[in-house]
Amino acid sequence: MEESVFIVTQGSRYGKKITDKFLLNNYKVIKTVTEQEKEISETITSETKSMLTELNWNYRSPFSSKNITLSLKNYSDIKNVIIVYSIPEEDIPIYKQSQIEIQKVIDLYIKSQISITCEFLNEFSKNNKTANLFLILENSNSNNPFKEFFKNFIDTVLTDDSISVNINAFEIGKESPESFADYAFSIIQDKKKTKGKWFKQFRYTLF
Image (tube, rainbow, N blue to C red; front, side, top):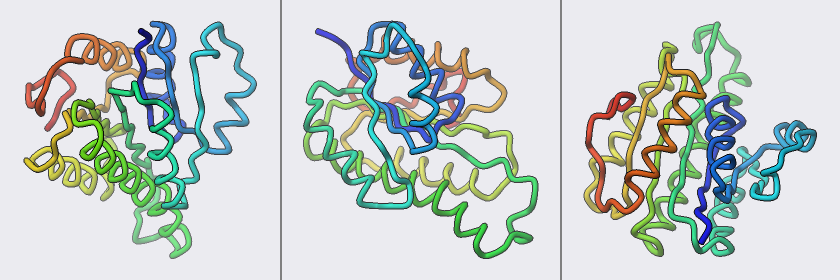
């Protein structure tokens, strides 16, 4: 039986390398893409492309996040979900930005990523309590308010005993996308039958 993994990413460098790692190891990969990503990915040729399914994700729409989770019914064998939180590396402090720019950043980096995480948590808590959910916070070296927001959100999820899904969280900063992709793959290989939340302190784990 083929192994499968669902990867939620907004085209981040870590998301791309994690996708490549699982494809090269004969995993079926279901991955979210934006319209911009779709234009790029269609130009890529790979022997493993037949193992990749891309689902359009409109980050501005909560309904799109809901539709992504509803599509899980077409992939009943999915046990592992990796959500990569892309944190913006802002050169200009947020208080110096226009209201339009602030709203754009909130829509792209907060509302969309939080909403799709909540959809997965709700879906798996009801229908697939043995699922493994990996929450990955990238660009953790950046100093901006979004980093602390996501850390607090993830920490709240980790400590909620009412959530029955297996959860592990990682904060990555200096590690290369390739090295972390290898690490994430090894965790799923070694721990895919583990039950309960994982609080073991891995090299990359902050929580």
